[in-house]
Length: 310
Image 1 (cartoon, rainbow, N blue to C red):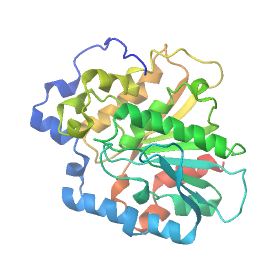
Image 2: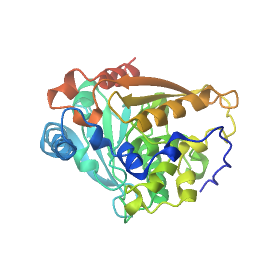
Image 3: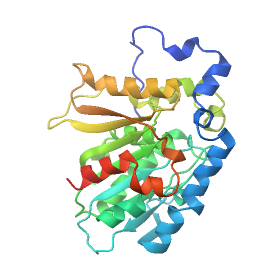
Image 4: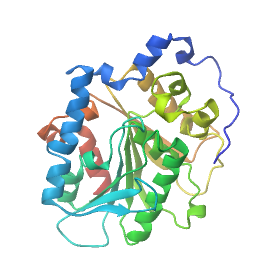
C-alpha cells in the first residue's frame, strides 16, 4: 500500500471546526434529500435498484453473465450486461456502487444497464466485500483486480469507462493511482475514464463520524486510501492528461461540495499535470431519481453516452 504523504496544506480544514453533531450531519447524505425524509430516501434507493426499473428489468431483458468471479474471496464477483448485438469489441462501462462501503451491492446497482446496452455498450457492475468483513484497503485492491480481470476477459474492448457513486467514487478515484504494472495488465481506459459522483476523496473527516464504526479506519488508513492526498505525490507520466468528470449533486451537503471542489482543484496546480478534471453540478441527486427519469432526462446519462459514442 502507498505511504501517506505528509500534511502540507495551508490553513485548517473547515470540518475540523465543526461540532460532532454537525460533522455527522455533513457526512449523512440521506439527511440532505429534499424530496423525502432520510428513511424514505434509503428505501427509495433500494427499491429503484432491486425492485423497480433497474436490476430486475436488466436481468429480465438483457443478455448477462451474473456472479462472475474475479477472485476467490467473499463478494469478489461482478455482473456483465450485454447489448443485443454479440461482439467482443464493445465499450465497457464499469460501475462501482456506493453505500459508505457498508451497505448496497451489485445486485441493486444496475441502474444504467438498460439505457447503455440499448446503445451498444456492455455494462459491468462490480461487487466488493463490505465492512465490517471487508477493509477499505481490501476494497481498493478488489476493484483494481476486477478491472484487471475485465481487461483480460475482454481484451478487444473498445474502451473501459469507470463510474463510481459515493463510496464507489472514492474507489474509482483510487484507480487513478493504481500500479497496473504490478497487475500484469493495463485497463483500456478511454474518453472520460472516470465519472466520479458525489464522492469523498479525503477520508479523514469520516474517521470522526459514526460512518467509521464498521470501517474501523485509523487516521493513517484514511490518508492511505484518500486519493486527494496522493495526486500531488505521483510522478507525471508521459502521454496525454487523464480526463476525469467530478460530479456533485445540487443538494449534497456543503462538505460533499467542498470535497468535490478540492479534488477538482488539485490538478490545477503546476505540479500535477497528468490528470485533467472537469466539474458538473446536477440538479437531481443520483440516488433519488425515479423510474423513467433515469432513462430519459438525467444529464449524466447524456454525458456518458456522448463520451462513449462520440
